[in-house]
Image (tube, rainbow, N blue to C red; front, side, top):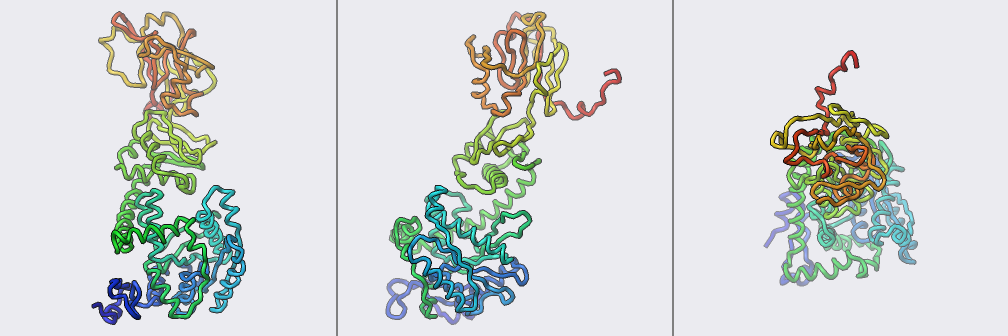
Length: 530
């Protein structure tokens, strides 16, 4: 049998001992026995995390009026568990979901005032907000609450708001995330302290504190009963139309039939995942520093080779970080969407593009990955025409392109056996078939068709070939093409026209190269007679 006095005198974190069902009789008919009192637990929480609070700044207390938040207010205001130099201010948001909610809001305000704590009450029509935004009522209410807390904190100069989430809420959150689909960050559940970004530039962050996150709901209800507290009872907590209520009243009791300790097990799993997720997050932060090249409003560029060298887990993490960095959130960003973009980034050829939530695009460059919001003219490291053109391409000779590229042409004597191995940025043409035709570098023409090598003489539209090759749409209008007066010859990086292909009878070739100008060449001074 556990000796409560020994445990309490030992110090350390609070301990809640689960009483076996067979022993839950008489006055001990409870699932948990509180070994260390809640006031000491909350006081220790603020001792551990109080450094994030600015000296003398107000401390918001989210007060719904239910048992959890009322107990937290009592612990902080009446039991002396709150830091002495931080005045408390209660915050209540009336969701306007029930006719009696306005009266309950007035009662909640009086609860706070009974402890000498001022209370700000705001009313939001959450049902209309949900309907207008396409969110569930639960999600719309959550967003409305955090928006309210943020605005009130800015007005009062507060740096933190305390929420009364408890250990059972943690279990429900973990299961909710698991059912909806999530990664380690979701399966770790809520953190004791969360940092929220603020809308206003230069504004201090708002911290969310959860002092009761390790405390079982039963212990909180026992404390409320022992102190004679009379919380507001929200009947919607019993309505099974809400996901969290179904988890609480249906799924968790069902899981307890398979494992009576499922709640503790899920919390243990969350603690393990939290530590491991923190470790991976540190590695991802270090990787982000290595791969991020440059950025501006609405776009950023990552080092392609360095990113492709990352482990799979860090590839996913850094892409999600890039999305959050550009969009401000990861709303509507599921695993499948990010994974499809990751595969394009990992395996796609130059110019390949993937669509991401919010209209954001990922484009595979020559040496980089470019992510940009819609409508943003982001710089690329790929070849683009320097103007409308066309531009004459002498043999031998070159045309300077944008972004540090050039197209070169030169004549080589000898047949196919003399040709070196080629790549996608090099093409060989039969010089005899060109005859005296001039070469031009130009953009695609409306409705233009050619005969791609490998299609046995069948024609294809240039527009379709570019699309099928996953060349980014924004790059297509100014992608440099090599052509004669009669037809297109080559789409650099992609396809050659079969009519100019080299055969066994070829006696001489014209070699075309599209290349990035090496820095040492780009830095060379022009000849004096240029």
